[in-house]
View 1 (cartoon, rainbow, N blue to C red):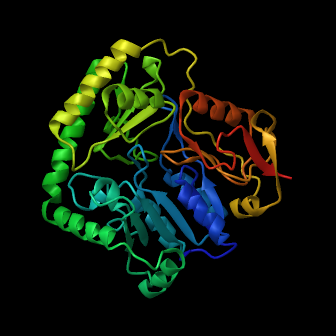
View 2 (cartoon, rainbow, N blue to C red):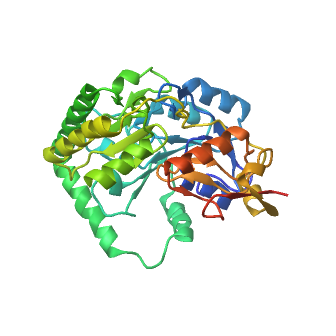
View 3 (cartoon, rainbow, N blue to C red):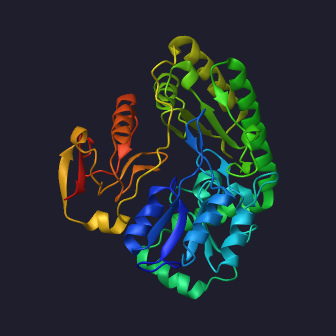
Length: 382
């Protein structure tokens, strides 16, 4: 809302959190999506390549801003410094979703933080890796930002009844990390690396890390993220997630079609990591099977037919899921977490997307975003 008014363009990766597209609907800004490269072995979307951003700028020199994930949910980072330089050279602001990158500011050996890269605005979710209470986050601003105008913008969307519990938790956790963050996150990384090594030794799982770096769409990797590919075991990520919770009383961050993410944090102990490793070894022994017939693709490039705002507010009709192909969706469909839309308002519904939705439902993914909570019907443009 600070960077874009109605009709203004913003360049952004399509694998953004739903909140970014919600903001597009509220502001009336026009997204210029950069479809990220995909790692076909893991089925996950990567970062934006510099060449993709350059092309988007060339084709949309009137864009007001560029948005970047730093990192993605899986720990993958784009070349944020270079993208920032490109944006500023063309008079565009750089907005960074740093929900999963708070620790970049307090630890050592992590990918570059948004502010260190010269970005203009970053949202840093202190409650994820920083230890504050859920819903508490920081909005970080560079020198080019008018903080007084930003305060007016924030006041349009926030409650006037602030939670001092949340505010104090931000203060306490920030102080702790400012004083002891290096030691805390060195321990976190040590536990994550140990878990990664042990999980890979089990066989069948693939806990991926910095070996994926290619200098562009995977410019860097957050080694504190314990992302694990599960499909070789014949188990979807959401199935391993459910087994860990239901059979072993272990709650991890999320599971999707092909991967799980265990968030190793300031609150974890070595014995928690050992429990996780042991449980995953047992899951392989008890539940592992052939991987034949498993869907592998987490990310499907969308076909954008209308802006999110126009589609969301347009006249619509409801169709059974199986009859919706060929129509333009007017609502979100997503697995949450991670909250990256499978479909967003204004995108074409294809047979491939319908197959994906049905498969995700069958595997037990928590599906949200639609008016029909069972996702048996979709709202489409008339």
